Structure formats: C-alpha cells, structure tokens
Length: 283
Ligand SMILES: NC(=O)c1ccc[n+]([C@@H]2O[C@H](COP(=O)([O-])OP(=O)(O)OC[C@H]3O[C@@H](n4cnc5c(N)ncnc54)[C@H](OP(=O)(O)O)[C@@H]3O)[C@@H](O)[C@H]2O)c1
Image 1: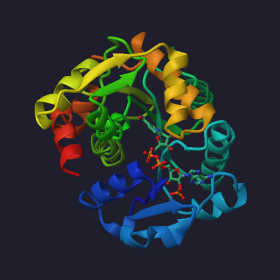
Image 2 (image 1 turned 30 degrees about the horizontal axis):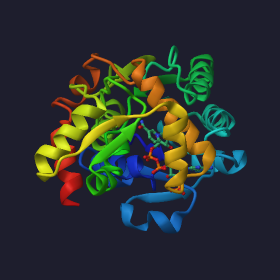
Image 3 (image 1 turned 180 degrees about the vertical axis):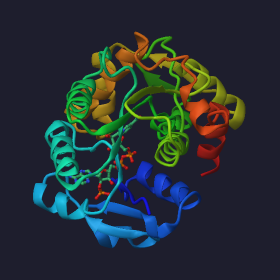
C-alpha cells in the first residue's frame, strides 16, 4: 500500500488536503506530519511528530512513506533550510515522490517570498527524487479577512493598482495536491496554478458592494502609506511592509496567470471570487 504523508497537516491548506485525500484513498494510508500531534486528533489519520527544524525526527517520521506532500513552511526566512532538512530526510528514507507547494512564477517572481521557493525548487531538482512542483497563486482567502473592515469604512485599501489577481481558494489548491498525489503522469512536472478568472481589488470592492448592498470603494495607496496603515491595524512592521510590497508586485502582474492547469488538474472550474465573497459575508 502506498503511504502518502502530508507536512503542515494541521495548517489551513493541510486540513483540506487530508480531508480530500480521505475521500480518495484509505485513511490508514495517510500520515499527517505535524509539529504538535495533539492538534491533529480531529484529522482522523495517523499523526507523526515532525518539526522541519529537527532533521533526525524527520527521518523517523518519514519511515515507510512513498509519496510526500511538502507544504511550504510558514516560517519565512527559515524555510529554505527547513525544506532542505525535509528533502534530505526524504532521500535518506527512500521517499519516492515529493510534491512541493511553491509560488506562482517562482522562477521570475519579484515577490520577496520567491527566493526561498527558488532555492527549494533547485534542491528538489538536484535531489534525484521524483518531484512535482505546484506553483500556487494567491489564496482568495488572503483578501477576505479585510472584507469586514472594508464594510465598516466603506473602503478597501491596497497598493495593487489595477493588477489582476488570478487567485483560487485553499480548497482548490488542496484538490490539485490530492489529484497529483493520487494519479500518475506528474513526474518531474512544474505546474503554474491559478484561478480561472482574474480580478482586481476594484473588482473585489464592487463584488462586496453588490452582495452586501453597502457601497465599498477601492482606494489605491502608495506602498509606504499602505504599509503604515497595516501597521496601524496592529500588524508587525516587517509584515506590514512585506504585504504592501506584495501588493506592488501584484500591480506588476506577479499574481496573474491565464494558465488553466489548476482547473485541468482538479477536473472542475476554480471557485469564483463571487462565491468566496459570499462565503466570507455569511461566515
Ligand atoms: N498562496 C498563498 O496565498 C499563501 C498564503 C499564505 C501562506 N502560503 C504558504 O502556504 C503554506 C500553507 O498555507 P496555510 O494557509 O495552510 O498556512 P498555515 O495555516 O499558516 O499553515 C502552516 C503550516 O506549517 C506548519 N509549520 C510551520 N512551521 C513548522 C515547522 N517548523 N515544522 C513543521 N511544521 C511547521 C504549521 O504547523 P502548526 O499547525 O503546528 O502551526 C502549519 O501546519 C504556508 O505555510 C506558506 O508557506 C501561501
């Protein structure tokens, strides 16, 4: 029996991956690799302790695993080393296939996040292991957290200008991971994954207005002003600056793709912006 292990299984994307994998393969062929097994109790699959920083423990956790879904770490700045630890442990334990969640256009992306993904992609390619790189675009959910504040103030703010964002939901990206993990034909492939339809932050404001009945406009701010506003909402300064810079990247097209690989892989259209907004307004 093929054992599929999933890192970051107690994270938001990981939850969807485990949930959808259970619909395709036997639960006893799935292993959740987690920092804190107590957090994994509700997943309904075996959980093994695996911190990206603990190389020896990773080898124990990967014993008997054939296919490894390596969900990129959320610890920005430490990720290249953490992913390297996982890849090395996978080599040492005989993992056959690694599926890695990278970033849309990772090879050319101007986003500060891209560098660590480039490093991991290069290491995977040099590892001799079979790999599949899923270059994920932005989660639609990244923007839905600000819908409440936008409604309160009648304005959505950002620095993305008229940049088009081909986002998809975490559920859509999870479905792609599951499709690759449970079917053949993806050896050493790199997929650019994005939503079927792209939208701008003005489109998001229009959609929120339409569905809520309350006027919300989009105010485009200079990068420094947007970062200052985010810091004013309580975000750590470094993160506020990073988010503002990613928006500027979006204004330059970094989050756009008209590649339809995501909907092809998952066998259905990606979740439309309107549906995601509806879910956020009803939440
Ligand atoms: N495409 C996008 O728009 C986008 C947006 C945000 C993030 N991302 C990337 O996609 C990944 C998955 O997204 P998400 O929404 O599921 O993020 P998330 O909810 O923050 O989950 C991140 C996962 O990484 C795990 N993790 C962090 N550090 C670890 C370590 N040292 N050892 C082992 N596990 C560790 C966390 O474990 P715990 O459960 O123990 O905390 C968590 O399960 C993120 O980690 C990030 O790399 C993409």
